[in-house]
Image (tube, rainbow, N blue to C red; front, side):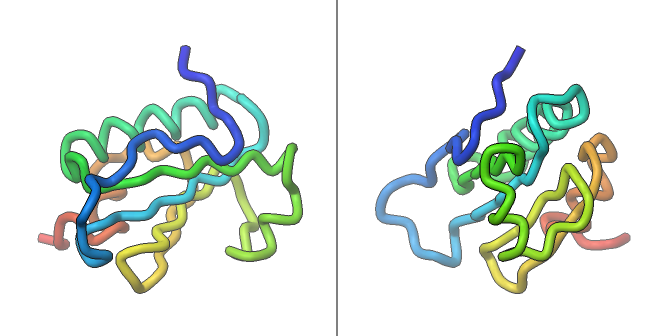
Length: 111
């Protein structure tokens, strides 16, 4: 089972890349609940399939750092926040609907 840790980096972008090539994603969770673990696993799978080597995932456990929710105005958990590329985008839920996540992150356009 994957352990979700506060401020854990799942994958680091390749060195020397430009900011426009980096995807900085922040996943807010509250502890290691089944929903949080599912969201992290789904996010990692999607990133590996569609953003190979061009992403960084930061997991924020709000049970450890509750004040961090204020910065991104987090109202529900789990919530994924795309910090880069701009604009900032948010997706709430366990990220099990791959198409919804791809469209929500602008990885794949709406058809």
